Amino acid sequence: MALITPASASFAAQTSPADVQTLMFQRNDWVPNNPTLPVLVYKQAIAVQGGDPAALFEQTFDHNGWPPQWRYGVFDYDHYHLKGHEVLGVYSGQARLMLGGPGGQEVQVRAGDVLLLPAGTGHCNLGSSADFSVVGAYPPGQQGDINRQAASAEQLAAIAGLPFPHSDPVLGTAGGVMRYWLKAPA
Image (cartoon, rainbow, N blue to C red; front, side, top):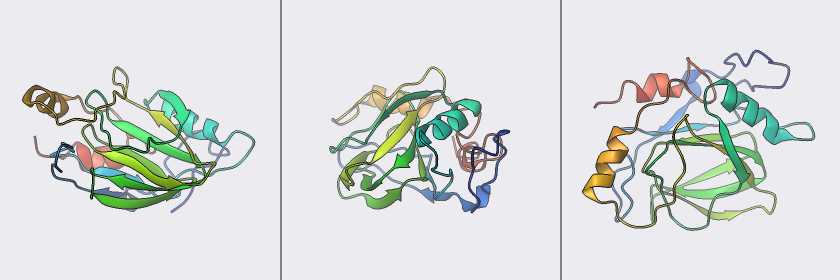
C-alpha cells in the first residue's frame, strides 16, 4: 500500500480501494453497531512525518469533505455515536482498540493507520502507548456524541437514517465509502 505524503499536494488517491479492510459487526449487548455499514480500516494510509504529523491527516480529511474536529486519543470505555460517522487518523503512537462493543474484535493500530467507524459502532481503547493520538473528523453536519447505553428504537432509526458522506476521508471519490458503503443494502 502506498502512503499519502506531503509531497502529494493534490491529495490524489495513492492507496488502492482494494487495500481497505472491512469489519462487520452485529448488535452486541447494549452496543447497536451498524446493521448495514462495515468499519473500514486503512493500514499505513498516511505517512507520519514532520513536526506536526496530525496536520497531514487534517489536510487529507478536510480536502475530502470531512472537516477535522479534534486531536486526542480514544476513550478507555465502550461508547458509540448516534449523530455521526467518525474517522480516526492515528498520527502518533500505537493502541489496542476494541471495536464492536464489549467482547467485539480487538484491532491493533499504529501511526499512519485510519479507521472509519459508521454511526453506532462501539469502540474503546484497551491500552496504548503514552504518545497515542488521533485526529477525529465527521462529515459536514455530523458530530461525535457519546453514548454508553442501549439505543432506543428512535435512536436505532436515527443511525439507519444518517446520511452517507459524499466522499471517502482518505481516498476521496475512489475510496472505501464509495465501494462498501454506497453499495450497502438499505
